[in-house]
Amino acid sequence: MMSDIKEILLTEEQIQAKVKELAEQISRDYRRKNPVLVGVLNGAFVFLADLMRHLDLDCTVDFVAWSSYGKDTSSTGVFRIMKDLETNVESKHVLIVEDIIDTGLTLHYLLDTIRARKPASARVAALLDKPSRRRIEANADYLGFQIPDAFVIGYGLDFAQRYRNLPFIGILKPEIYAGRGTPPDELEE
Ligand code: IMP
Image 1 (cartoon, rainbow, N blue to C red):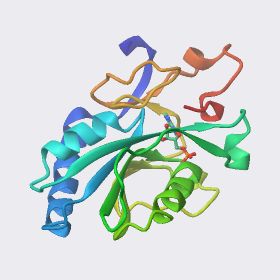
Image 2 (image 1 turned 90 degrees about the vertical axis):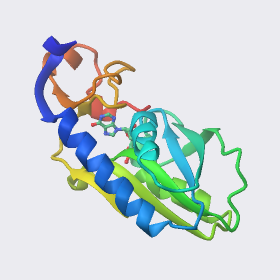
Image 3 (image 1 turned 45 degrees about the vertical axis):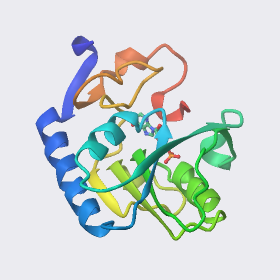
Image 4 (image 1 turned 180 degrees about the vertical axis):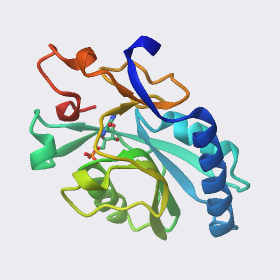
């Protein structure tokens, strides 16, 4: 796998230090609020697992999985829920945990869906943000790193379901996705 990596963008040490820092901030802000952490499958499960272990809070965890209709999702923003929350979030403090904000469409519609359920609050923790790719307003209240417009893998993020287990965030060599017919930034989860 290492031979597929062009560049390490964020090392394991950088990620772990940042996750701890975010957890400390979240622990301070959510004291006595018993938040529901909502992990967005699949990519966010590694970040969520590390983040929650640093939280000095009484919290619960739930997951949503989104899928797109057709391959035009990034332009149409049409999503369907593959796995909904088990938790009734009405009057609860919800913290959505996302791996990366790219066009912003996933987060925008997820926030709309959650807010329609009348939570006490709804905020977002995202490890990575590619602001230059944004198509719709979507921002993280707790952000790990802003990164340039590159397709990244590792620490939960995949290309064709691979590389999620890498402990760092890296950029793939272009020849890995060349010849597959679809550049990675047009692939959907
Ligand atoms: P958005 O709806 O365009 O903001 O995309 C968000 C989702 O696209 C993320 O949760 C990821 O699953 C996926 N994604 C976006 N950029 C990357 C990337 O660079 N590597 C891996 N997955 C990505």
